[in-house]
Image (cartoon, rainbow, N blue to C red):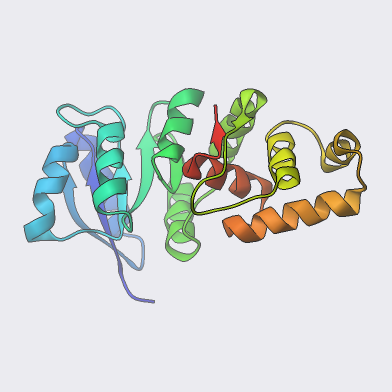
Length: 216
């Protein structure tokens, strides 16, 4: 497998350099540079290159993580972002997912989990951490399904299933709520999985958030 390039955007220089040294030890990864904020990151692109994966802090001066992710989503959508932050508030985690980040880790995570996250993002495109799953499922208690997006289309029953799936109901309970059999619900689930290109309930929720199908 070819080398995956990494950039780090974090204003805490000592921690950022330690993180760079750690990632540099992972086989198959090469850290291109460490930027102090989003503006510094973007200014490095022309001369130092655009990385495959960005490790992004949230709280930074001049151009924070939200502003940086917004810019990159518009101008460099192929750049995969892994948030590495101290912030664990539900609404900010959900906002970052809507901005297209591929995973969210706390800075207190173990090196092995960081390596796993990078590997999953490189091979699968996303990393569904236990932390992220917990916060998404908490947020889903107030989730609402919006209208169809222009790129992904669902029928009325699929949208009803998606709304119910964004809750703590089991699939059997969803079947009762929709007055259909469990096999029918399985069909709705598989149809949505196929349309969103996901393989799990959490993956479905993340994609629905990213596409704007779900609001929190």
